[in-house]
Image 1 (tube, rainbow, N blue to C red):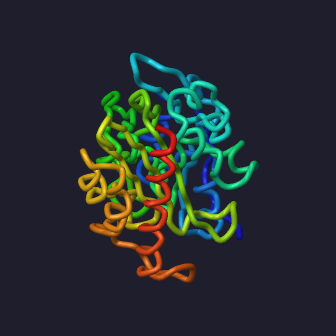
Image 2 (image 1 turned 60 degrees about the vertical axis):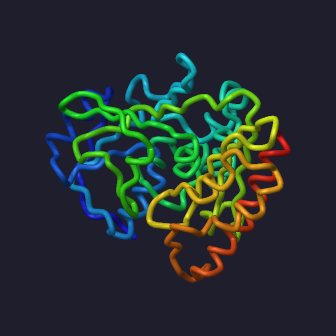
Image 3 (image 1 turned 30 degrees about the vertical axis):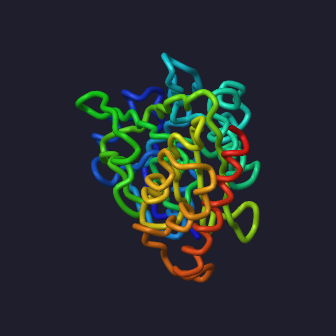
Length: 284
């Protein structure tokens, strides 16, 4: 498996990367960790004429907090997220999900921004960021703009990121104090993509559940929110979890492949949503 010929350039900054993308046109691609792009190139499913390497671009590997928002540089490795004391304290769901990505080699090399820009509906981080109402900061020739996760993932392996834009940063609101969380996924092997996964954040109330956010992995062409589950749990007692979880497949489009058919994925979504909500509530 040998990629088609391409030109290679290394960008030292976001501005330089944007300029190189504009120079290369629609056949230019960014290279960060390479775990998504390089396999596609080896299969010649992707044939960029120019690769712009941003792995050493300055100022894109940070993890910090600004006024109640967690800011994660696009070049932060999965391992950076998994071992971040800040994320473990302020948003443990994100740190935990990152610790389950692939294997140690992938986690030490793959980047959060690369995973998000690839927009795979089977991605752990993409669904977790949908669940957390994250926002993506992208930069292009016209400057920077911010795109909500709900609008960023627009189709299978397709995002709102323009051909001449670079994903610079991921912004995650700090979950409410006292929230519970869980991430459940079903895989053939621990290192595999999830056949189905569920991320859940629950905010308790004295009567039961104030609100819940549920993100679904591999249940459609994009990372999804289980809107029917969330609506059923808004202001509901804790005993409503099982009935609400049964609504997880509503509004989804699970694919059928060699690993699972659509019916089995719908069943997994129901089971994993119940488990995720129960575990999240146990942490409140």
